[in-house]
Amino acid sequence: MDKLLIRGGRRLAGTVDISGAKNAALPELCAALLTSEPVTLLNVPRLQDVSTMLKLVGNMGVVAARDAATPTTVRLDARQLDKPEAPYELVKTMRASVLALGPLLARFGRATVSLPGGCAIGSRPVDQHIKGLQSMGAEIDVEHGYMVARVPGSGRLRGARITTDMVTVTGTENFMMAAALAQGETVLENAAQEPEIVDLAEMLIRMGARIEGHGSSRIRIQGVERLTGCTHRVVADRIEAGTFLCAVAAAGGKAVLRHGRADHLDAVIEKLRAAGASVDAGPDFIEVQSSGRLQAQSFRTTEYPGFPTDMQAQFMALNVIAQGSSKVTETIFENRFMHVNEMVRLGAKIQVDGKVAVVEGVPRLSGATVMATDLRASASLVIAGLVAEGQTIVDRIYHLDRGYDQMEIKLRGLGADIERIK
Image (cartoon, rainbow, N blue to C red; front, side):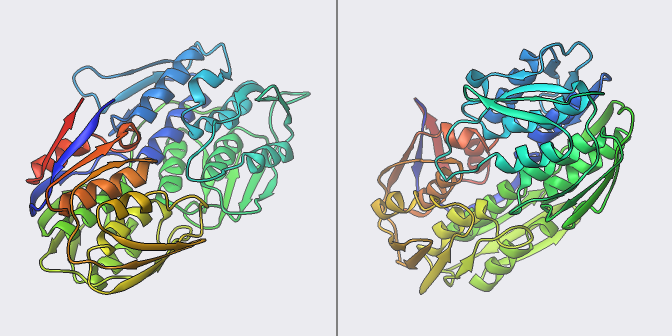
């Protein structure tokens, strides 16, 4: 099992390329199921979750492969798809597999998709997906751990007004893809507004879908008879960009993030500036500079465009060595403070009470062996290791590989002393 060995205390400087967004690439791979024509995706990150999704659609009969010369280009052809199923063996490590349900139902009128496996950061029930698709005419039964779905009669979903009980990103994506081929109009109320939703909508529009309102809480989709193939570039990963912003701000130095989208990170950048970091941006880059000890910042996670839950752990890593105390309130997932105990091993002072973590900044951290518990927790431990004195080993970095494309190589390019060890 791979680990990261970090020798902390180095300032970061240079330029780093931000990869395509995992949370856009996964639904867009599923969107290719909606058409019998070829689809080409550009800027697809090289991640474990993406590899799993490619295996999943390949198991259905889709021809899907990375370009040999340009590995970030993926070509998919779902013309011969003959097995609209997502077995447990392929989805147990990735909850995004539920995104296959809507496209398969929309195109084939039937689907069998395993209930996703457990998730360390908290429960993410699929009941909203089931209720929404049922309102579009699907019959869905849960049998032996699988969602067995079909559309009786014509086999074609029909438009509906769907109001979810809470904001759900994957639910909004599933409904949007399903509605693209449904009869009539679908209106999504309380829709998620994340940039990845907007990017998926723009891809579907390129395929011939009729969608408006994406990026707001109400999305309208007018169903069409068929969708075509397309070429689409995956939007830059705002969470990867935010992680590197926090890393440079915590360790000190100056870096340019090429392809970073500052307009997707307003809440994070606002807190970084309040902490004392300098952040400038243009249409296709973000520049961050930090010197000296920053000021601790309290924040509360919430749905986009608020402070993202996926950035909570990374910003906490900055807070633990900042001046003053801060309060971090997590409102999205119930188990998203599992990195706290590991940070305490490095010398952080953090007290957790339910959904609130109180952080008392310390002047320095000391290296130790720590264990990653989930994707964003692993990134926060890497940041902490970059600023800690001495040597830090981050174990179980397969979590990191699920969401960061060659993170240690990119950090090494900025001057970090970091290496992957077996």
